[in-house]
Image (cartoon, rainbow, N blue to C red; front, side, top):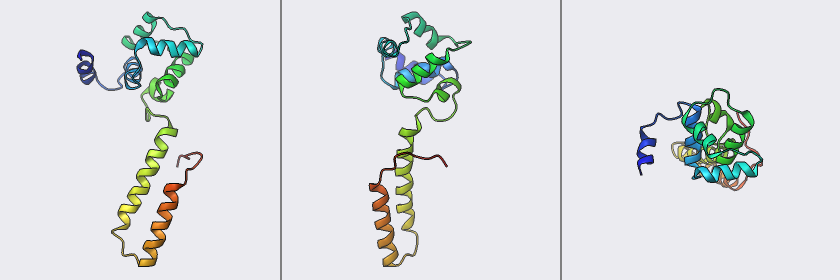
Length: 140
């Protein structure tokens, strides 16, 4: 409980150490669980080592370790290291954005003066787009 209130007081994403801890917390991993996942990836990190990463700003963070932590906690390495972009990988964010865009098009179409045929065509198109699953989500 005390940790939750501390998290609310901590400035969001202001340092690598805070982002590491936030990523672990958001992924629902206890420190021991994260260390176990890292060990399965071939990276042995001591309890003290993880504590230091989460509490004091690493001067020269090991890139391999940072990428492994990002992968284990399902965040992007760019966000973890620099606080830039979205913390979620594109393959998880893309479908959510795609669904929101489709819903927005459907909603805004209600403001248009469409003929019944245009409404049917739009409804058919929206249905086909919702049912299709692109293999990759391309960035604009």
